[in-house]
Image (cartoon, rainbow, N blue to C red; front, side):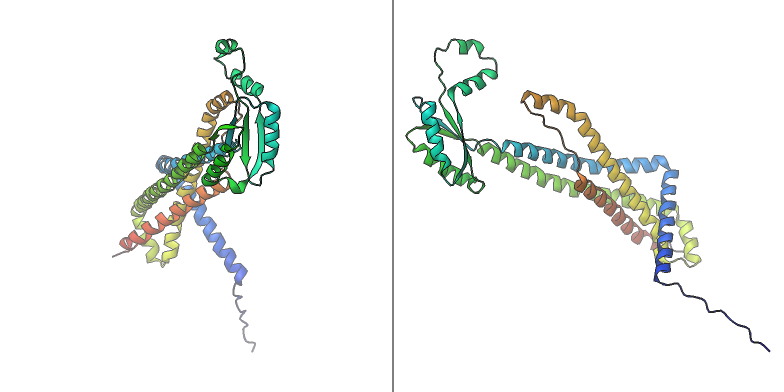
Length: 321
């Protein structure tokens, strides 16, 4: 008599297990997204609040970054303007500039002649009648001195300025970078303020998402009880709520990026008109690739954390009695 054969069931390998796990998560993510889209008004309101909360520090960051870029362009101006005695002519000024260029702490020296200085002053406008009354050019020759990168600290510039004032051709000097250093300090202060504001608004986003997920848990309390009765694990029950928080964070981050970009588009025309008055073609820079990635990653992380806290706090209260 023949014995029946039993085929041994093949256990899924690691690749099959990963495929099953990935398929379950994709289905849960898409189902959660569909549930959110089925309620467009509540979802849109929550996403709008998250987007506005994230757009505020993002806009301030973009503002500080553009101001820092603008200050970087101003940093190319001369560090010290040395005004020579009135009786020093252009030839003597060029000889002095050649001597100064040989100094190790000086990178470049530009000679601004009397005629070029008067032409620049005349180009400013508003002084045509006064300039016509002048018989002689009252402006002195000016040397625009650019230091080497290793000699650009305020202390080193003050030492350089004192050294330049000891020259017999020198009349007086003016440091042109003090205001720029103060402006850089203000930008550093703004950057710290942006960080603090981002932390505070991030906590607000965390609370918004956590409260939204808590309400959704309460609305699905019966469904959760049924899943627990049929043997669903805590991870399976928690999964859709975590994806809901991640979707809220992602959509809120995209909304924040859109708001910041729209604000830059609206501000660019007046900024261009203002820059043209200063003979500049400065253009506003938006959130770059790195900053956009940080915003999206932060928003998704806040969504996951808020959902995790809400689920772990309220899931036990939804267990069947």
